[in-house]
Amino acid sequence: MAEPTSLLLGLEGLEVTAVTRGTDRSRVVDVVTADRRAAHCPQCKVASSSVKGHAVTRPRDIRYGDDPIMLRWTKTRYYCVNPACERRSFTESIPQIPPRRRTTTRLRTQIGRDVGEAARSVSEVAASVGVSWPTAHAAFIEHASKVLSTPKPVRVLGIDETRRGKPRWTRDVDGRRWVRVDPWDTGFVDLSGDQGLLGQVEGRTSKAVTDWLTTQSKQFRTEITHVVIDPSAAYAAAVTTELLANATLVVDHFHLIKLANDAVTGVRRRVTFDAHGRRGRKQDPEWANRRRLLTARERLSDRSFAKMWNALIDNDPTSEILTAYIAKEELRALLACAREDADDSEVRRRLYRFYTWCAEANIPELTRLAATIETWWPAILAFVHTGLTNARTEGYNRLVKQVKRVACGFRNTENSRRRIRFHCTRAQRANNQQFHC
Ligand SMILES: [Zn+2]
Image (cartoon, rainbow, N blue to C red):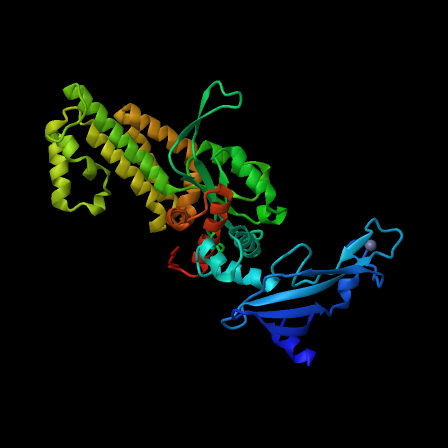
């Protein structure tokens, strides 16, 4: 009789001795240990038959159909019979219910799946299976760490910064000075495979990056052929160490275009200020054209382009704004070599055109832009050759914000980071995952 019920319970290592119905719809299932390995000392692994006593525990288990079941497990306590062992006594445990656990492994797996895969909130899942929030959350952590485990080697690694909320001011250690806390995170993304977000660390310093890289395996580090970063000196310094001996640095081109746009805006503001002695206003033609100035030429209609061009010719006697605009477009043409699969002579020609334009313009903002391009040129050339970008990372940043909005109850950074990584990784595998709380 015992065997079919044990089979029905399906908890390996336990044998059902009795089932009784409770007053509510619950059932009380009495079990004893049926795994001989449970009588082995966990420390020295020597089997014991010297019984010290018994203990009854009530581990939580999954529901049986609609009804909850209450396990009542009578465990045996043994003396360790090995005189060389430090352990005097021990209580039985089985893989389904490890020592000191008050939930079965299969219940924790179910909770982990409900929170993780079904994206339900921890409190809701905890209530539905009848455990506390910390127990349910611990089960999710266990599940997530199995799924997230250690990243497998990637060929192309993306490193990107994400802002985590607004800057805050806090007292420093001795409480005398105020210190600005810039809530930046650095994200690591698998740009060549399907692992999605590999990790996230606090800060955007060289050390934040090298620390993360150091925790990865040597194989992980040596198999990276390319690293795509924002044009940040801190990231570049971390990536060009011997940690990543085989990696070529690639700078993300969107950030370069942003630098060029910033130069155009800088020139526009300065010219306006010089002309009117004040900031730009709506009635100023260069202010009215500020968006067109930052739009790619091919995205402007001919009419729109002519309107901007003529307004700037008529209203900016220094013609510095147009000069900056053209420099920006020259840089874009240079970066477009990646898309157009241009040969090296064409790349050199466009680079030369950009440099001479900036040099002849003799405008401080453009001189600075050209100097930046020169500093980053090897990494820019690597982009032109490979076309690798962090565009995918930007997608994760959106996802990160979305998960943050729904992750109720995750006020702890570590917890929210785990949840974000879990979802980004999953979203990578099954696109268009929806979240609800
Ligand atoms: Zn022992």
